[in-house]
Image 1 (cartoon, rainbow, N blue to C red):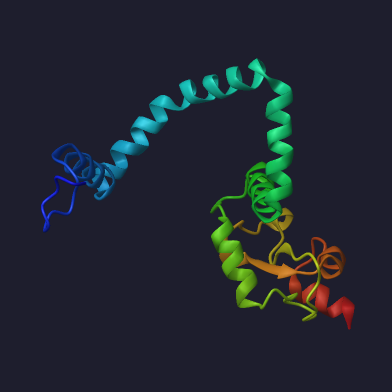
Image 2: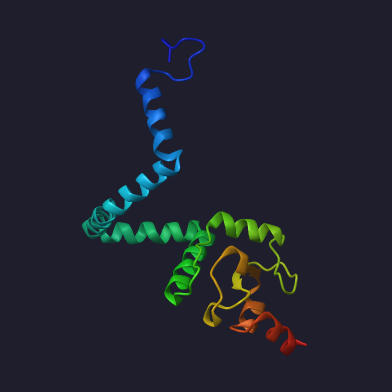
Length: 165
């Protein structure tokens, strides 16, 4: 950036053009719709590429996956819950991102929402169980210790509290 003018924001004209193109693509509703359409068209090609990469060296792919799971247990748990909710197939599915789950856990100070204990591992509990028509969304999820989550099982909160007392 030695040739850059003092008041310039970008290092070169091509850099400025790339930034403008990126803003145009993602900054508007039409841009987002265009990106979604392009992704939908490229999806099959991306999946095919990922499969070829996996079968080119499956041992390395499996090792990478294991390492990633060890390094990211919370993200893996969120992935698992999202997949489970999709399999149940309840209407109104809203994926819970890692950031959503982290925000929920932080709101409860990393403690169980039911008993207040701060366990080593906090799990995702659906207030209205998926098996009883509950939605998989941030508004239906609370952090729970494994003991409370296991004893609540597929009961509504009111049923569980009544049996616990």
